[in-house]
Image 1 (cartoon, rainbow, N blue to C red):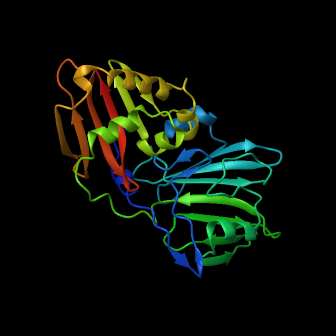
Image 2: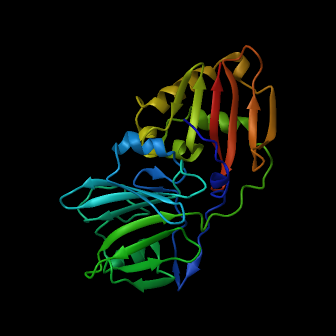
Image 3: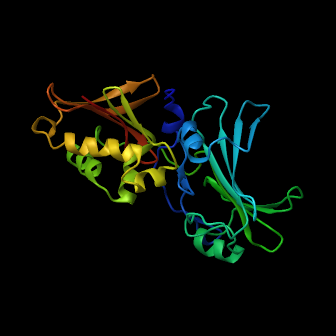
Length: 291
């Protein structure tokens, strides 16, 4: 299922910093919009939505997939894939009527007023009026999100795109302390899990694959989801005496692009290895292999 693409993920890495623009503190760049996280695999959209309403291939090779969430009132989501990696989206957009239920984005949802967005997000660095569609676009310097407002100053579109606002990968000791990683792997707190795992994390056991097969937030919030079932196996494996401490911890150059932290366990332990990558300012679990 996975086509190994790490470059786009490493580009996400960095610490999210608050800055002040035009006298108003702006929210940091965001990885998540309406439950989906930049870097998730294309196959997760098949499980979440089925066939796209529209698939557009642009002149530059990018692919846009659009899914209708509701026809009346109209609401849709669009996911954008770069030409050099058509398996992982690097942009998420939700647009349409403000009555649509959605996970709030940094405290705002579709239908919010311009004043509310200013209070919750901060003042835009730049605004632009378009005629087709007739909207006002708000952009933020060194941030990866943008907003569109209709003539009544109501929020009709939210988009996250790319990696602006994400700093360099962590420069601390490599790798992170095993006790910290072990604690996070055993946690069932949703926010902790969202921070712990990379958007295309996978767990392997024999011929079974446990992956994030829907919106990341939906998968991690459901104890019966495919990935959470695999995670339960991991938690059980880590209780084994031989899995309490890794036999070897090192950094590995992966695909010649970046360094991951690899924990290897002794023969006889039910877990073989755990791989972490530095993404969006934190080490996040990318791959777990069980015996």
